[in-house]
Length: 131
Image (cartoon, rainbow, N blue to C red; front, top):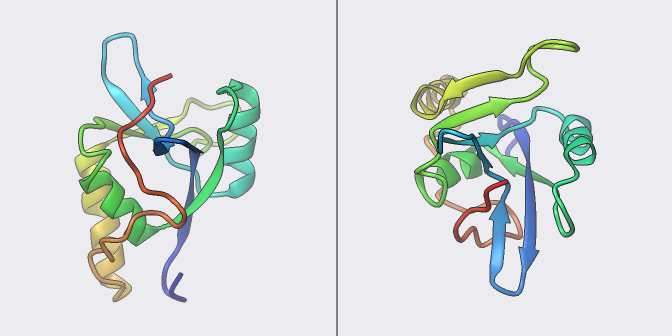
């Protein structure tokens, strides 16, 4: 990851068919990608939600997150930041397009570019899992 690049964390798993990131599915059918600022937050979420076997915390660069949101997670409607509101508060939920636009603007200000086009390290993201 470049020095001007911030990492973030997703919940992911790898199996015989490839790799998936955890995508939440709400009762109304809308989907959300949980994105974490700290590895510990992602680990706590994974532990609390007991997503099942094979899921783990995966660090991705902002460039890789952009590529993911434009690629296999293009149909995701929301970005959820489960611990962004602080302890005891509701998770922060942001429209995918608003989140992507803000991320690209921040990367542009830092001179990081729009995205590498590469997928998250170690993953060939194909499809998504609902929970």
